[in-house]
Image 1 (cartoon, rainbow, N blue to C red):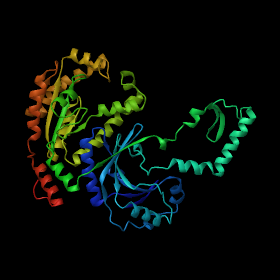
Image 2 (tube, one colour):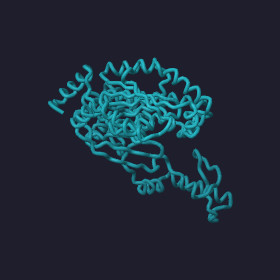
Image 3 (cartoon, rainbow, N blue to C red):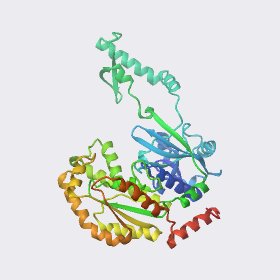
Image 4 (cartoon, helix red, strand yellow):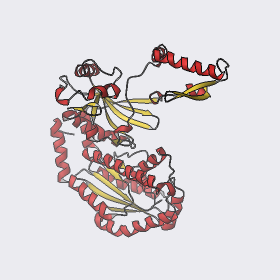
Length: 440
């Protein structure tokens, strides 16, 4: 459906949206740093920028025709990195069809360098944080055209006149007259002035990965060993929850070998602190800006979790467990979808928690670590009642091979157990019917 907004876009719906949802779930499954863009943000940008702004007021969506050609996505998704940003995209098939369609809509006007694509995920879940995807530019040709333009000739004449007025013309002092906001503001080193690159020229890293067919993605989702499994973690600061989860094959920095999507707002919070130029210390964490970023990281992980649950993927929900009522509410919602839920409670003595917190990258400080440890201990009996036989307690005062070996086997058995809840088996049957799959 075509939309006239700050940009001209074609909103994704129908079969293409269904494909994207499944593919998006699998991208989240395999990339712990990916945060999904919401369904409302899934679109193909047709026109944007100054040229579009001039036309926008004269155009109504009702006056524009929908595409009359076959619409599909290419069998590759693209990962692009630029500076601190990273994005996951899928190109549309029939790029020439899209270009001709836009030219017809806008009566010959179009962006010749536009790549028609759909942004699926990035590092924040905010569509404004995606890497711009355009065709590679011929900078030599652009520079040649620019230097021969009237604007460039006027610009060079102003610089020469400024140098003559200052008595510096042709003295080879290694200084350039520098322009800022259209005005000459003084001299600076020529290497600085000439090396100032526009944002679009920052180096980009592009990775193209071949996707399976939609049917294969669907089968992979249904076959996923972690499907319809949800593991909650609880424990005080420095208890080693992420470490123990990694030993059990549930998660960790490198992802989960069992295909669980890791929902960890702490890791995202650390990334946001770093991007904001803040440190992971108590002063910055509990500052007004730090707490704003904390809330933002939780919202972003909420988006990631919602996308994972849409594909019924297994999830590892990393938290402290200090609020058992909220955990009970989440557990009930997951069980209503057909999930089997477990609680992994990683315990340590207070002294161990304080010592480990002091050596963490993101430290809370002795007072806050003590308060949090006490809250988690108070919540422990309630968590036991909520999860009953699915409450798994690990004593992590000492790192031992016992945890690694026995715990890994135990978790593997739980994950390999096929889904049995009525809602889970009904969902799997429906997914198979939708694509005509008779057996897995």
